Length: 256
Image 1 (cartoon, one colour):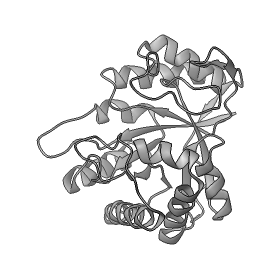
Image 2 (image 1 turned 90 degrees about the horizontal axis):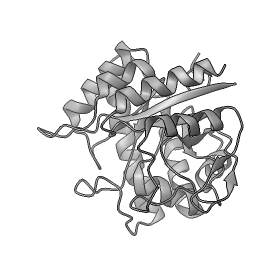
Image 3 (image 1 turned 45 degrees about the horizontal axis):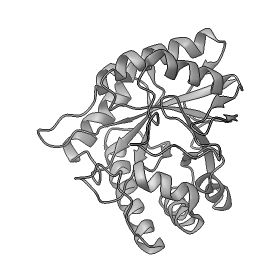
C-alpha cells in the first residue's frame, strides 16, 4: 500500500507565527498551503511554496471560509455561489505563487469548517468540486474519506483522495468528532501513530461512540499546528514505513 502524508502549512500571518513548517516538511509528501482566508498572507504563501519546492513536497491549496479570527473553524451560512467564488479566488491565488516559483498545484483540500460542512452537504460539496474543476481539472480534490466531498469530486470528473486523520477521533458514521468534544484530538504521539498505523494497514480504529470503524484512505493528515508537529510527523512517517507502507505524493501528475 502507498499513502500520502499531507500537512496544513503556511498558517502564519503578519507578525504572528503558527506551526513549525520547516521542521515538518522533511517528513511529509504534500503541503496544504493556507490561502489567506483563515491564515496565511502573500509573503507567507510565497515562502511556503518555496520551502515545499526545496523539500520536493507536492503543493496544494487549503481554501477556507473567510474567518481569520476564528481560524476558519467556525461554521458560517454560505450559499453555493459564494462557496464557488471563494474557492476559485483562493486556489487561483496560490496557483499563481506556484507558477511564479516554477511549479504547479497538485491538489486542493478545504480547511476546517468548510471541509467538515462539505463532508455532509452535497450542494456545498458540488460547488467546491466545480470550483476546483474550473480552475484546473487536473487537480486532485482531497476530502474526508467516503464523504459528500469526495463523491462530489467524482461527479465533477476530478481525481479524488480520501483522507484520514491520525490525531483526530472519529464518530461511528465516519465523521470527525467536533473539536472541543472530550477526546476529539489525540494529543499523545504514540496513540496518534497507533491510529495511523491501523488506518494504513486496514485495521479498524476505536470511535468516540465506543464502536470500531474501518477507514480506507489515500492520504493521512499531519496537523501542523500541533506543538510537537515535527516530532509527530517524524514518528508517523517512520512508523508507517516500518509497517511496510510506502509513502508518496498524491497520484501521478496528469501534466506528465
